[in-house]
Length: 395
Image: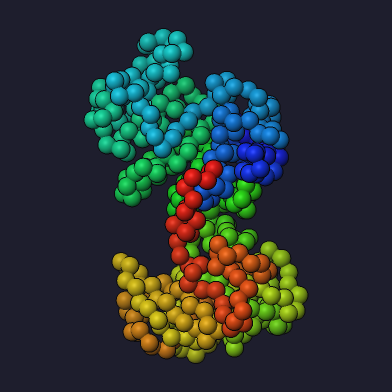
């Protein structure tokens, strides 16, 4: 195991700045995920840690030792990619033990290590099979075992589950979590999949435009996103524009259309002056369709159901509220009232996130000419699809 430190990393290709002053420390034994859309710099960062690329500025340190110019083969790394890259003419056991054999380990010791690893990935029965005789999930587990064969100090994984179907991905997430926690190996994992990041990581480094947008635990980054992008990319969110019109008790009062909403002062990442133009964020699962009167500490918006979309155990409601925004609500079949029904949206004011207004068309946040317009449904779409359009951009 090793502690990995990135100090002021910068990388550009011509005029394109891919990484812009990244500072990050990965603790010994930590599972850290570099998360973000295509082109955010996550894969480039991983490739610099691996030694495949050299930064234009900054340093990479393993346990305090500068390895920035140390070749890949001397960094004691294990690497797993989306392409399993298994040798088709070698058996599973031969694939796992290939690095051990090439480094001159005695056959008896190498065989013992291979058997240990096949037991770890729960595939001892396939030792003599060839890769093409295995499922995708089994091949990926073999690739992981091969990466662990020489007991690396750091394990690097670049979207290793991207080629698997949903059920296999979920199963492999459980396998990865178990293996990493059992071995305690320092792991840097790259993905654009928010669910993978949330379920696997000790911490997540969310990246955008070559910078780290937020570095936090999965729970903290989801429940207390520091920026609109963090709220948008980790889960789903509705955005509303408004202005600070006062304070009452421990809450800001925010005017949104004709409604006045509450947002807690404590817990925000910055303070706001009177009349500040702000963006509120609230997640669809925090909202309830409710015809009861407003209770203390709750926010209420009035609107009309524009669409009911059945998506399994959840019904997604698009509600046009009085401010002109369309708000997405996750509800149930029992709450379905029919398109055109007038409803109240109710949520706990403490679940409201507040940010200074800044135009960000990618998130649907624009300075609309129609002052009644707020941002709702466009920003409640799954961020992975919206932001993954430029597949050719450097990752």
